[in-house]
Image (cartoon, rainbow, N blue to C red; front, side, top):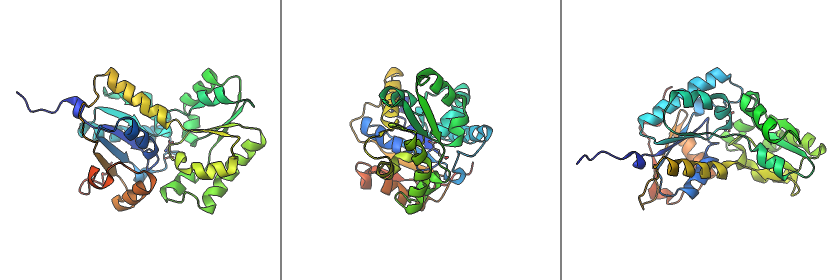
Length: 278
Ligand code: DGL
């Protein structure tokens, strides 16, 4: 009998330009506690938002090749920008199941009573065809206000979650939306859920904040079930992180941002291979 590992036992590969995708990983851990996860942060090339679609495609293609070489059975693109720029491109090139993200325009359009909704995301997310098609399909009956918040991803990467500068960037983006009457706000960038307390302070309780991460975790579980790829083990998942940036800086921020179950013995920080040159 062969001792080879079954594909079911392979890890879930999750990636983002930086720490943003940890907001998605947190939900995947809750939903799929027995799955191993490899998280890849392309910190050296963060932010992706101002980059061209071609550049983002090249970077994500290299990340996928790396994650597949680690035996990942499914890939979660935990980044709206990378999904908008490269999801179709990646699906054409790789056979592995790939779960992508899109700004949650549909739930916002369903929930709004004022018929005005806001979406905050990066420039590249708004530029992709995906966003225009989402608005056309699900939100043609409401006004959708787009907000790019330059510098906000960098603030999160620096761990400045409730800093005056972070609040100023958010106010600059959200106050005009509030004046136009939004009552739902979609977080179209995975870095932003870490700013929910600051966002709530600005928009108040009357604006519903929509974060698509739990839906992405549910979709990941559905795809694993459909493909017969759920890990049937009873042990807790193991978590490994890779970054193209500084491993210690990433590790410190990761611990601040998400509380992983059994962190001390369950999390393996792969020191030796942490810096990948793409
Ligand atoms: N976290 C990302 C997103 O969901 C990317 C942010 C960036 O690198 O600009 O869009």
